[in-house]
Image (cartoon, rainbow, N blue to C red; front, side, top):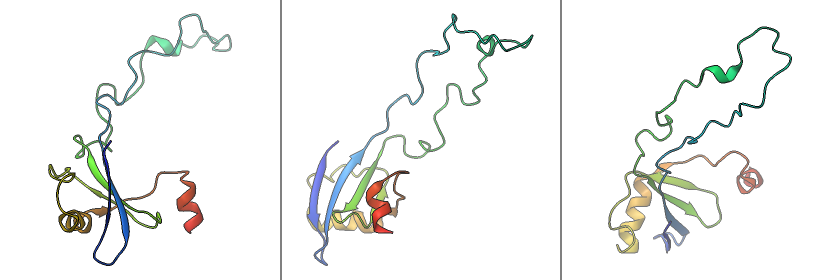
Length: 122
């Protein structure tokens, strides 16, 4: 993850960083161990006989459209966060004015659940 700090034309401090999702969002193994059985199953088939996950082998819907990642813009006072996808190739070396333009064209982004900084601001 690369990070860049800049000041917009209104004097607001921002930081920009790239976010690239992992190539595989699912585990590579079956965590259900064969030696673990449920004694209370009373005649039902054990769960480990079949995989009931609906999305086996597919990416989550969140990753759809942002497979190659996005550029996140966040005010340093943490009152605003934005997301731009795809990541502009020149974002690390462009001028602050161009980076501000990218920030203006970015879409508002929600804070992750459990983010204490966002909770304090409300």
